[in-house]
Length: 80
Image (cartoon, rainbow, N blue to C red; front, side, top):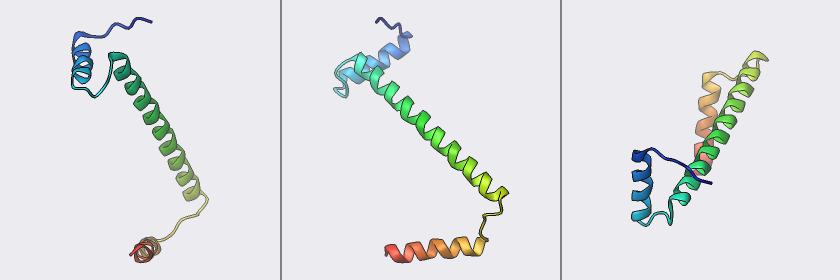
């Protein structure tokens, strides 16, 4: 498969290869795609957590600021 890169992107990829960080431009592209995939998975996870939080709020499953801070302090105390 042939991929055409903008001159600037080609130079960046070649610089990464020249630095020894990657063995080839194909490896640079593979890493970029891998990171993009991980980023998309992370975004999906965050969206799911936000949706769950909003559901909890709508259902009244919340704690006061004081309860929250007390829980944080307790967790820190247990770790120390």
